[in-house]
Length: 475
Figure (cartoon, rainbow, N blue to C red):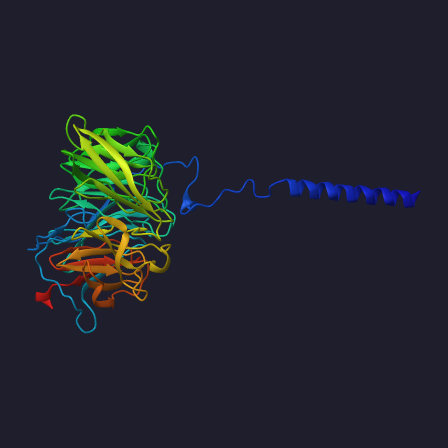
């Protein structure tokens, strides 16, 4: 009897094991897992949006008198093309021992580039010790810190914090922080004027790796791509009053790409590559803020480069993470716009970019290919204006630049590699012509945009900003 009981218990245990194994095999063991997306580690559903006292934090350290008057007033310069019109001759070879370093400044981890206006450098910086998002002002010639203005906000590390370039005019500075807090201050002393909490006021979703969109000042208006309850908004620069809002009926979200003005078909418009599609919004007239054209054919999650708009209505779009590129053709008739996709290709088939916006040179496009571009990955290339798939030349296997950045000044292309090596190239539509190269900083992740004025080049790596004197006459 005892032996039969033992057999019964054993049989029941075996049956339970078989049933358990069957249940386990039938059940998807990862059904409750969420697929990891780039940069989503700091995002969550139902997150509480904090009230932030924008502009409440500020200190003045020094005043400045200067005769410098050139400007690099915004992301990609005065004409939105990353080309300097300065007449100051610049070096094409580095002095022995490297470029002349005027000053360096430590910054919090980030990728925010500088703006320059009449002898002052303005840069966004997150101070982890103070837990504050700050706009810092430095003297261009000496690096002396003049003042700081910002607000307290608690942020978690997310591959760097600040990554936007201020927009500067004679009267105002406009900034946007990691969680899309917009701040307007007086240019000369940093006095706070007004602010906007985009995440709270427009129920906007902050992009991957925090905000990368650089703010735009255009004809007295602050132009911000909010996403959320509106797609774009315009605010009066003097008061912060909302002038118009573009409806966001399709629910497109804010990307890392920046808005730029574009004139075509007799209208001025704002072109924006959102997470969801591309749009052209009327910039003036009684219908300002309305959508002139749009397409959802271009829809990628991580879009950082801005559109490149050509006079003939071609609009070149690119993004990272396998997106490649797309070329649109706009046509205008009696105030109406049509948009057509005329080319689309992968990163291995033509010019594409992960982070930086390509530069137009003599009608050709110069850009650095992304890491997924095959044999030409991370190389500088030149492509034909009639066929962006046709690579005319590349920098070669021993010249890979990572994420850039690059700019044109004095008929020279200045390129910064990921390890903060500065390379000078003679731009050409025939071949790659390198003039010189030197590692300026010992850091990494030197992807912040460049700025130049009065012969002073400002660049950075992830934690240090440096000012180089590139003027021939001062060597």
